[in-house]
Image (cartoon, rainbow, N blue to C red; front, top):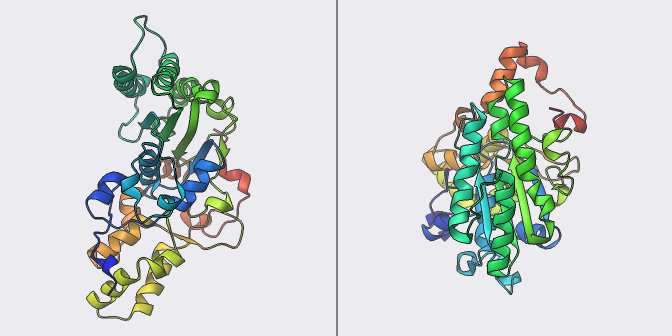
Length: 331
């Protein structure tokens, strides 16, 4: 059996540095990251929950921190020559349940206070967006290198208020100004990536931030998160073999069951490989048994609430074709 099978399966591991240092298996996505960071600057990516967005951001963070040793053996290790250290502004909005704007403001203030402790602050109290703007300017001035901005689950505050239109609008107003710093500070930002499960594209949040390149359905980055069939066959084959032995069945049967249960995501209209849900795949291989792993932990609450509120008949949603424009939220 291939020695890679001795690596620990990364069930729920979202920090790239700890993943590498602690001996977890990593499906190499650094070729896509190399393209992303060298052929553009400002990006947006929508993917379902538990699909590897946080690990992607953490990997990009380590790359822009110049931590070359972490990438030994990966695609980007042989491509990058400089390994320049950039100031990083990494925001994760996932931990909170945003029942009020005070919670959102407190979360953003928490990040700003950490950055201000590093790069300094003004004595005069300013708005959250102005403080963010000043942090970026001071960081660039002090380090001599442009900043990198990474936002995980940018849309969590709005989705938390899905039942409260007035609160949603207040959240949008705050986030629009905060994220708008990416445009006003374009010259000081080397790279930015916002991720979430939805795209609020038609109003408020992105109406001014029109310099974002949406790669959610870009064929060049269809596999930047998730696992392809090729990766299943090449990287995960030893684990599939071990799963088959544990369950006293053959590899072909296991492969077919994995395709039936965990495959089927497609993020482009072109004829490219389907994508496996990584959390489901790693969980099944780790436990040695099939299960509805994503449904148990990754189902967004806002979808459940919308289905309840609108009395959707789930069978009516099965195999229902929609236009691609319907995937861009109007709200």
